[in-house]
Image 1 (cartoon, rainbow, N blue to C red):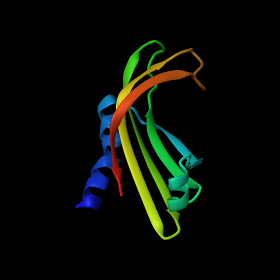
Image 2: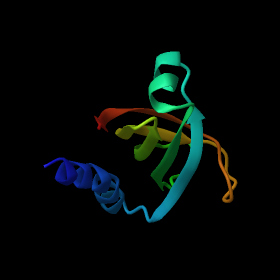
Image 3: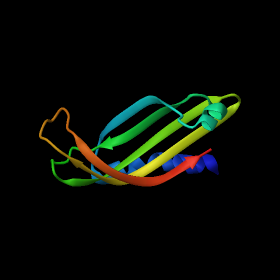
Length: 114
C-alpha cells in the first residue's frame, strides 16, 4: 500500500506537466544539515535531497501553476528517514533572458514520511 502511494505521489508532477504542455525538467541534488540536536542524535548530521520540477517557459509576468517533488533520505545509527514532499502552487517568471530567469513561487502540499 505504501509503495503504491509513493508511486502515485511521485508521478503527480508528470501528469501536471503533461496537462500544461511542459516538457523541460529542473533537477536538484543536495545535502542539508539537521538543526535540531535530537534529530542529529537520531539520524546523523545531514540528509540527502533529490528533487525534480517541471520547468515552464511561460512569458515573463504571467502566473503559472507549478509542481515540485523532493525525495529526502537520512540513514544513521540504525535509523532511517524518508520524506517525499509534493507541492503545488503558482510561479511567476521575471526577465526576458532565454537562458536563465529569476522567479518567485508560492507552494503548499503534502508529504509522505516513513
